[in-house]
Image 1 (cartoon, rainbow, N blue to C red):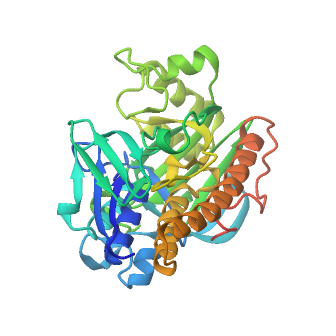
Image 2: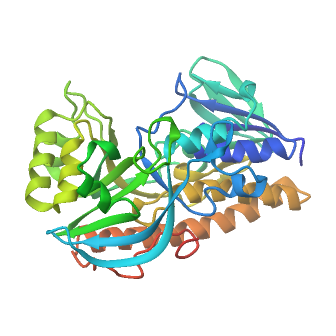
Length: 398
């Protein structure tokens, strides 16, 4: 099946991973991304699980900056630490988690796909499955038919309507405030707290975490890195609607980009940081003048395949971020697809086996991520140092 013609709808990390793997096994792969410019992850950080960097590990190239083979940009922090309101460490474990930025991983994958196979400004408006093919319709009026269509177009997936129409997306009742600040812009005492540790503070029905990611130029050197914070804050009813209405009056129910959050909400965030957070965390949050907001949702399709159309990544199942496995799951979907296609003699047999395996994985990890979120934000039972609160797709650290 190495001669399959494959259309990948969505050119983010999950779509790119699948595209690169299938291209390298000999498939004719075309990626269609609705954005008219190369994607940007707004500086967001990513926990690097083994599946996230499997391509780079197995290819022997390493996750590096551009074509500079010697400059590694996925960094390792030794400790997972919890601090109290005073800033004192109340628990620390040597977990050796790895981190990078969304932008860094995206660029590294994009370099592995020939540019003529990555098409910007090609948003899909629909997909029509047939017995042995599927046709993608595009906003520019064109259509193209493939042996296999991979829907990697995120939580608002167009492709999902052809596979699992009417799949509910449920708001979880809270949002993640996110932002980055350069290490060098903090006081030395605050920067020291994050030098070799991911730092958590557990609040009343809320929590915040900070970790280092590559800074300008993808630098992972201490002192030149960025610090990524994520503060989960409950927001419901009218308060949520107002929060997700931008400075120009546009309602954005999923993501509020940097520079568009209403000034009063940024001021409220900074004020709450001073009143609730440890000094090191408060200084970091207050130094970020253009945070952005991601609303947290639950969504798992009841099927990932219809005929020759499949769903991967967030198009198939959107995980709450607490298990830090969303990116790893998207990559795992691509690897599993490659493996099933490589080992099966029949395409439909391969896709059926792939769906059963990846659906079971998604249901299990989605349930865990929901339980973690409910403990932190709803029941208020999150406990600093809990060994069950660990990142991982298949288990802690994996």
